Image (cartoon, rainbow, N blue to C red; front, side, top):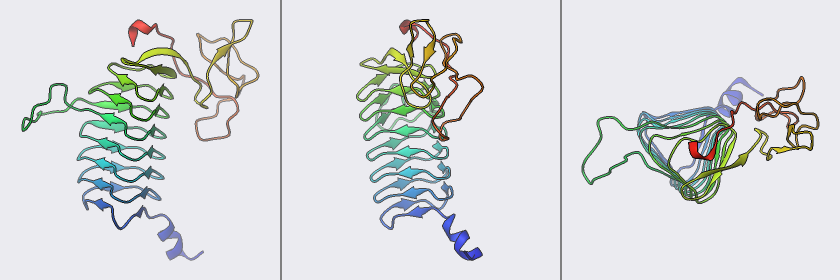
Length: 221
């Protein structure tokens, strides 16, 4: 492959019916589909997929390898870290007490941490932090922080279980060890699942992931 073709292959792919402000930063190989609007000073990382009819406002930060399904609006103050998944029609809010024609001097920071997934039609209130590799169920209303590796759902969202970074639920075997389908050998580690001697980050071969969560009661969610 020639140098010019290699260089072209690294460019983002932007649908002709999308609108991307020249002041926005779009990473390598990111795909932006029709009717997407990205405003100035937004930052989008490499290898993302932003589906049709999404809005990304000024100052939004999106990491690499992020998937954003159709009908999502990301407002100022929202930060999606690497490898997050945002389902269709997820709603983010960035003003706890909104009024027409009244604007905040500084918007609350809403952070979706690395590898977290948010199911379709969930609502995320301003200023919350969605922990690493956590899973928010479809239609949930998230009113406060979600711990890493937690499964939450409902209105308001409550802690319902724990999930491995590979995407499988964590269970306990008869010996009381926490285990995951991706790991046939597990050790008890403060409620975390770890295959001995193996730690694969999300996105690599799915066999034996280490969890980084600390168990909390549902009252803390």
